[in-house]
Length: 155
View 1 (cartoon, rainbow, N blue to C red):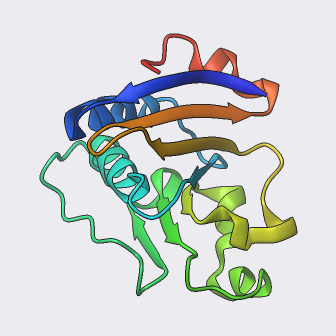
View 2: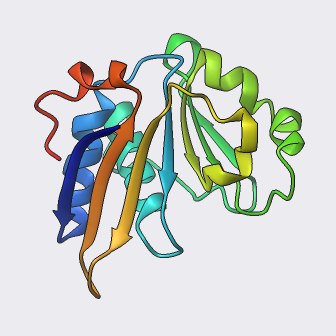
């Protein structure tokens, strides 16, 4: 179900603004699936959302391309950022502990197609697509329960 968008993100600041707007609406147990081709802005969106959630615009937020998962915060405010590009089978998700994290933490997952049947049916999906050399188009979709939570989202 289409929930918000399409919204054109002309600059990195536009991406950061959208990410910050979403960051305040997330609660433990929420999963955001970040879809799009290489270079679509998935990592930039995740980095901006994490910085907004931490309240630190200068926080070091490395890409989890090689580590597969980075975690931030603790307790009820734990956030997982996963890049599943290098996984070859959904069972590897279980080895990372990501299945449990999707129930207990806030999870941002790049390359969610690697989740296979483990993708939560209640996840929010953000599709990012390049529209030209600089701009990206953001579209949110997901289960209807997200609709009221996205009211007023700048998307």
